[in-house]
Structures are given as C-alpha cells and as structure tokens.
Amino acid sequence: MPARFTQTCHVLAVPDVEASARHYIDALGFESLDIPAPGWRFVQRGPVRFDLGECRDARPAHELGDHSWVARIFVEGIDAYHDEIASRGARITSGPATKPWGLREMSVATPDGHRLMFCEVVER
Image (cartoon, rainbow, N blue to C red; front, side):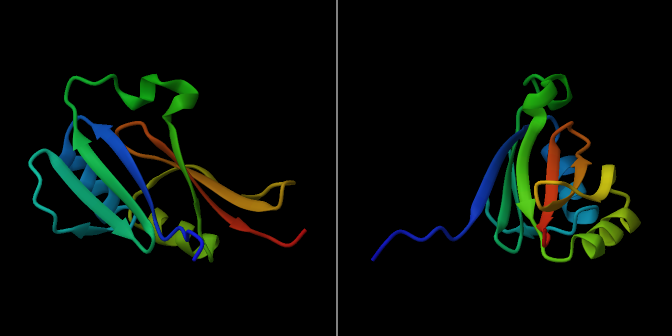
C-alpha cells in the first residue's frame, strides 16, 4: 500500500504559550487538544494542527522577515472563513484576493509575528 499523508502539523516557538493558544482558539477557530506536556499547547482545526512551544528567549517571529511565513493552508470557502475570523478579531494582513496562479488567498499574522497564508483553489 502506498504512503498516504493524513495531516499537517506546524511546530512554532512562541514567547507565551497560553496567550498564543488563546489566539488560535478565539480568533482563528481552532480547538485545543488535551495533551499534557509542560510548556506546550496543541491546537487543531480539521487536518491542520499547530504545536506551540514556549520559548521565551527565542528570536521573535516578527524579526524573521520572510522566514516568519510558516504555513499555506488550503480552505474550501475562504470568503466565509475570512468573515468568521474577521468577526473574531484576527489580524488579517491581506483580505481574500484571486491571484493569477489559480488561488484565492488571504494572509493572517499571529500576535507572535508568524504569518499564515490561507488559500482556496479557483477555476482559471
């Protein structure tokens, strides 16, 4: 049987793991996973998971420039997701826009400075 990918998980260093987890849950609509691990919080929405590790002395993500981009997440219904997270107070840095490469994209920044790209495949 060939290998089949089932999930994606992004591991992020954050200065305050509780505050970061609250953002993913409250603003982006993720759910908390009940995994006991000191200094860590785990959140998931569908097949997308973030493992947030507390690293108080790590270089802040907002100082990493282009390296602060951490995920491209494909969504069905990107406009509805935009409306959902906008009403929850997410920091949307660019709203949904159809790009020449066949994707409708929007970008979101976390309070820690990580940047996420949400996109949906569109007909060309």
